[in-house]
Image 1: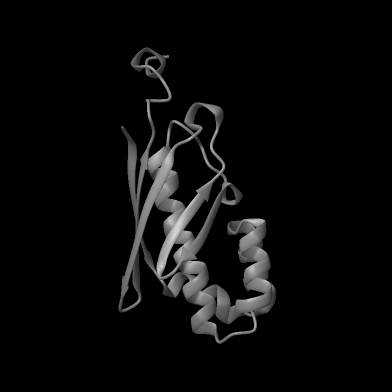
Image 2: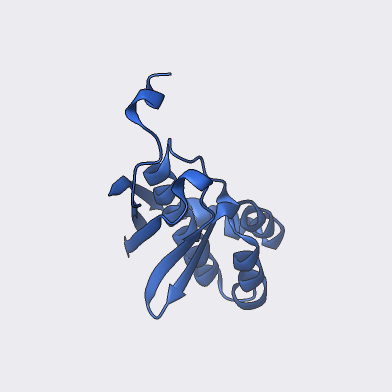
Length: 138
């Protein structure tokens, strides 16, 4: 059963502006939006790369996490660190720290980019709806 669908569009120039301000601003932004594993990977593999690689890494995660957030709301209100984006081959995947009501949910994500615009798409599915319709009326 589909719990929700989320989409986010991002102009990469927003993230590029942060990266161009310098490493202190980039590190602070990364700590805000990345999970602990993503932060480690960023610090050891991406932070010393060219600005374009840093922008791509951060923008991809921002966009996909926003899409996942939109797909799960109001069933679960996610924090940035609840979602870990990683690549399996060339395809991005997500590990999400689900609440008990969404335990076992599965997230399907997709990402596309062209000329500085990025789009993240997420579908969250589970065996059952986390809340009954009567709970939404409260």
